[in-house]
Amino acid sequence: MSDIPSDLKYVASHEWIRDEGDGVVAIGVTDHAQDLLGDVVFVELPDVGADFAVGDDIGVVESVKAASDIYAPLSGQIVAVNEELEDSPELVNSDPYGDGWFIKIRLSEASETAGLLDADGYAELCEAES
Amino acid sequence: MGQKTALYEKHQQMNAKLVGFGGWEMPINYGSQVEEHHKVRTDAGMFDVSHMTVVDVAGADSKEYLRYLLANDVVQLQQQGKALYSGMLNETGGVVDDLIVYLMTDPDVAGEWFRVVVNCATREKDLRWMADHTAQFDDVALTERPELSMVAIQGPNALVKVESILSESRVKLIEGLKPFQGVESEGWFFARTGYTGEDGLEVMVPEEYVADFWQALFDADVAPCGLGARDTLRLEAGMNLYGLDMDEKVSPLAANMGWTVAWEPAERDFIGRSALEKQRAAGVQEKMVGLVLENRGVLRSHQKVVINGEEGGEITSGTFSPTLGCSIAMARVSADVADTCHVDMRGKLVEVKVVKPSFVRNGEKVFS
Image (cartoon, rainbow over all chains, first blue to last red; front, side, top):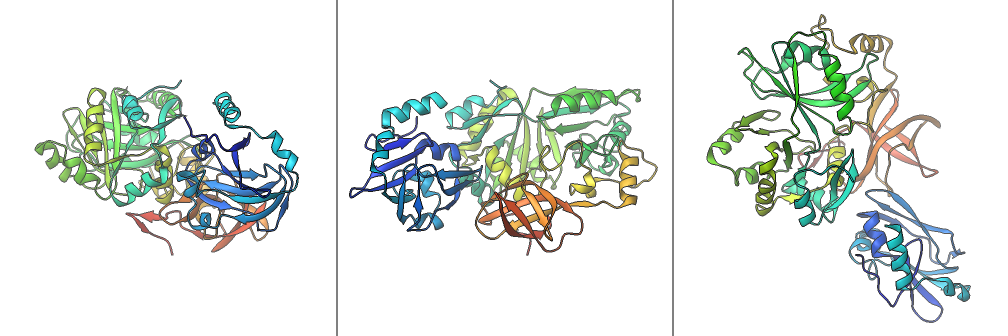
């Protein structure tokens, strides 16, 4: 069974969202997602300052197995990207909720967070997909 | 649920992630396929390849039968245990399957027989094809050997580690093996062959012994490796995978298998010969090359190759090369390709280097 921390929010596309305060959230992919992807070898992330609406493509994760698009789970502006992933993409596998984070977004539509899943909701979704 | 090999419980104990593969449930990895890959390149890893199909070919006409069935010529097997890689072609020169054939007996003694190992996903059609073509020979007997499990132990330390768990007499047999040669020992078969570009053994084991053999190897620090690492290793070694790099519609001459076609002696007829001769006379328009992407990204099967702005072929298999730290691929392209070309990667054209389809041998990069 994969790890699903209870203090995070989730979306059905297997990304997690952590509230960093001040209208900023950190985003990464879940333990379940990294397990499905297999060994991650490249992560392509957007530039700081870019604006995205919910559902937009914001990057690509390439694993040994396949390339997967990353979608913006919320609308906003990129305020930070995890540059560590350039040299150490394996952090996505080894620490998906910590050092393997992808981006931080300053939210433009705070109301969108109401639609996120909590840990139980996400666990049910993983269960249903398996 | 697929078929299970005799090592299924071992795989579960060792935390394998199991996937369906050619009707079997096989390990894709035991945690990290990249770590497994490195273990094979630097030390020793083992693969359960019991899903592969083993067929023994016996009878007074077995040699003549195989000389007709295969594009390579088993007459080249001049020593007991020697192995030969060959395509088995259809009448139009397409590849029905690729296989390894071992001469199991002394070449000078009557009553010789052979052992053939074919792919698992093609098992049924191969067995039918092989059986159908025995009709014109008086004395050929085909016997499938499903009770033999098979473990491939590969890597620079593979032989030493296998020898460390075997009896003295078997160690002696293995020490006497040249590359591409095998030896039988009381129902077991040890062959110095593999699918990784490293030294190593493929061992056929009666299935009742294989779990203990696997455990003993594990205790000797041989890492269990899944089909994921097997694929990145074979691709780095430039070895074809049936169904991706070639199939019944592809000529061996366009699949980097020209070296496996024995044209001489000219009077030997084999299935597909006349079709191949016509192709050779007309000139083969396509060839298999290796591609290297030095920038970020991963080349994948079926991506289009672009040469001078026009579509010029397709990637047959692509992956990330853990040894080289960049992406590599095999591609079938038009024969006039230059030193570089482009690949359409998810709508973006990226430049790639064109090399011979072989990237890593014995742990070292082989192209420049």
